Length: 401
Image 1 (cartoon, helix red, strand yellow):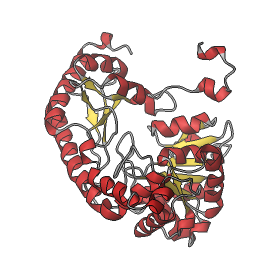
Image 2: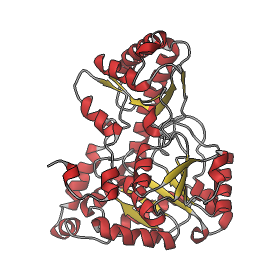
Image 3: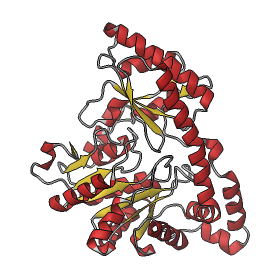
Image 4: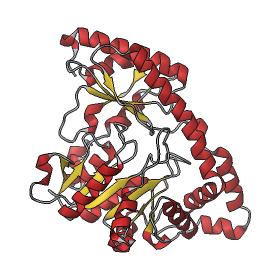
């Protein structure tokens, strides 16, 4: 029976497939050079660390049974303490009680939406912004406005200010310290909660690390309990995306409410996965991060160099200090969706930028990921893509998405 034959909820009726997830289904053929998914290179995943974690967990019946049993909603205590120590190194002083383990940081975004949003509430975001956040908050009835735009301060005051300060998905942008302080000041003035999405923070290739907004918030307010920032972290870009382990931390008044909401969702994040991540983090987090940085830095540089060689007139692109993405602004007459159809025919894939605009803009933008392609693939792929862009710019009548 078709879905419309059932009495679905309003939220379910409005649900739409992720353009990125649907695209990934189309680009699985071996010949495809995919710049589409922001996915870690599988050869960088720390198989040895997790093999050892498996062995340790099953080294005795007591440890094995604990890993296979139900656990607390808040998460595995030793892992929460590891995260508290990690956050302290970033200038955020907190205890394990301020940490909730989630099924990836995506679940943290969903829980925050459930915690804070009623239908029609406003959320301030960058433009463009992470598609997963737009979908998650949108499912809770959010209306979106652009952080920094004049209309964004109109009544009613926004409930959330969602930001990715480091190497943002999709455009790779990093907020300066001054911009982070300004965002914090604005949140205070509007009495708004900041959601700081730190998925890519560890993947810095150039420049000095900047303090998280959560650290600046605590520095100004004096104590974690007086802050208004919910920091969302993840192990998906550093240790394993498949185990789905992330976290959210902040003042206990908010974290405890998030834990209550999580209870009704999945009881707790998989115990086995939490223990495996904890072992891997203790044994080799820093090594895994350095390996990823070295590889992705090389690939970013290869993509930037190829763009400099082959880009046609009118093409502009970002130069990120880290992360996984380069953002292209095409000549205004080129439609990214129409370009994608021709690119797939030549075994090249990317994500059209319109998916990242809550207001339907961005038709002449695209997101390129360099995380899964080696330097030779990047060279060929960018050469082909730039040729397609040049042809599309020269034939505007074909640019209909």
